[in-house]
Image (tube, rainbow, N blue to C red; front, top):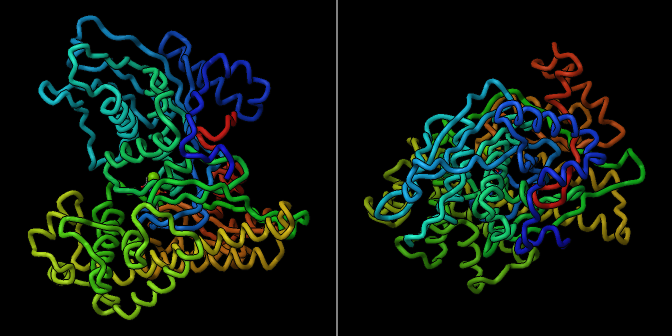
Length: 538
Ligand code: NG1
Ligand code: MG
């Protein structure tokens, strides 16, 4: 494991303006963007920013919708990112330090995104901060607020009379991660905004990278999606040129995985991202899509566990990973090694098959059936599974969801094995062959099929685009991120990248009328980039 992925390592500081100017020579390709942001900040706020926080988006190579079941995933940061220029704006004397924070003025370089101005109020008795976020609408300012709220409640939540007042902050955002595209613009926003408030309030040094991942996970949930921690981990910890195997249970852990390479471009793998141009608005559709899947996979875990005589307390809602560990009698807190985990998954998939009817088979269980299968009373069931999250469904498909999660968790480990073996075989120098690419590609294709048929998180356009991609020479192609729209990721040999992109343009109708610049915005090859705290990539 490289040091940079150590979740306990301290966070290097956000780039200060001095560092930016010191590094201006190496900023090269990105320098226009950074300098423009600094100039615009000065125009709008009358002084230079003191810092720039940067957080990248990510592509998930494999492991979809399993992070919230606490199984490991394999994302990589991409070069596209969110930059936030910040400076303290001081506190106004008239405001009462014990009652409200300094004012936040948030602006976005993209004119479609309106400025937001807000302050947070402190509750008199509990001393908790109050900063309402509208969960029914998708607003970029919500992500800024979510970052702020987390920092306030972690660092400014004390009952002592000597209350420290959070700084007012002016901030200006610019982003190159497309939103609603499964490339995690939301996590990049939350990570960058959390970093901004930490640095201005001089709290950055109090956190490790792992703390930052946990804090940003909590922050993002406040916007309304009960997501796992893949995106935040990838955005914070990723290392240039490596994918990240992130595991969540029993602890957050990140392992850098070198991707296979070959000296022959014919076998050198390149991951190409293609946007289906269907925008997936996860916050708005959470009740019938993302959050519903969270509930389905949790109830599936209970029903499966119960049938396998696993101990589950009435008020608990263990995830599928926790059920697997208990079923295998893994000691609390012990990390199950990859080989034992694979064996366990294979056995649990078999059990799931044999419990197909109990789990609602293909059509799913009604709410009544679901409550019955859980072994809980209606009231207890609602308290444990439905009181904290809003969902809307007539049927709950436990069998299909559990089968997807367990088989996808297995594919992640198989993908990881292939990457590691291809590096080890050549004593550190990866020697990818056609066979390596075929095996990785097959896992990606299987992942897509499972997302489409079992997890039902694809859409006709994603199915079409992945199938067009296979026809255009990809070894494998799958949706990436939550799905229901957004992007695909395809594995293509370096030799074929240009012809692959050309073929997609001809075959996928929404691309046909595009000129080269427009096409480059929606279809692009990517190599793993550095995370917000991995290395300084500017
Ligand atoms: P996207 O839609 O790419 O942001 C979401 C979740 C992830 C993960 C994937 C599905 C958020 C912030 N992230 O990713 O945690 O569950 O879906 O694998 O919602
Ligand atoms: Mg997101």
